Length: 425
Image (cartoon, rainbow, N blue to C red; front, side, top):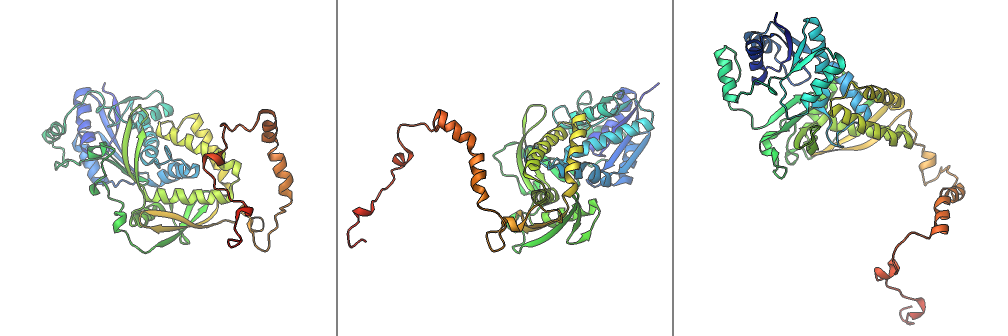
């Protein structure tokens, strides 16, 4: 009896060929699963292509809202940017797709799930590990990693022989993955980290040199760390991100050129377009700076970095990931308010922020009239704060090396008052 496999199906050439290949060479019944996370899915066309390739069933699910609520917002609340730059667009979508793969496998009584990843990238790890975390009894196969091994021309011929309608035009010079949170572009001329990315690599962002010269201000509202409005208009998460992608992208905001460390141990030059993500991360960080204490901010930054690495490495469903996200959720109780962002060519900057839970006290911060800070108390505070270093210096010296003073090394010009002439005085 043949086993059923649920294939993560994009509808592109590789996965379209994988459907008949899995049936003919592996003897599997195939169910395809296509997940719309904002990359643009023609459901009817995708399902027709999958069934034409021999799939027993073709499932399409619009998961954009779940993607935003359960993956994008938690990563934003954490401030998670892989290696300080990448907003994790592709990495965040993989655990969602893996969960839906597992659920589809249970529905179809499948013992296998499959994906179209190669053996060189991060996605294979993300899918395999996420599936194992959700149902360790399921086996994962990857035709592109082991077995299928066709060139593009061979895949096209294979598809035509089986009546599968796939695009046969020239292939893209880049490898691109797209979802609501960003575009990831690699390969081709981009593999040389010295090469300037060509204009053809970009679709969501205009060249900053061609962006409007007039500035645009946008006010983003947050409730407990979640963006909920633009310029006072309440919006659902999908619409909010799409609008910021369009408006910020129109200013050339959101281009990221990053040489990153892949999980498998190689460096990779990646180009990202993430206008909405770049704006929202900057706005969220500004609001946290107003509402969270210094100690919490410092510790939370380390948590955000750790969560970014976990997401990148395919460990979203690990116990550590679950626990750290629970911590982040707790930190967001007072991250409510508005941030005014200013759009200029290629740049989004914070122009103002306010919150009903602000820890900023004008009476303590001002140097003008109304200053309520007790300046005299600083003397005792400094004496106690500096006590350890004063004790250290008394016992062990200043710790400054050198036989000459820095004044002498810098050639200080010394002029005594008595050396001035009467006229000079």
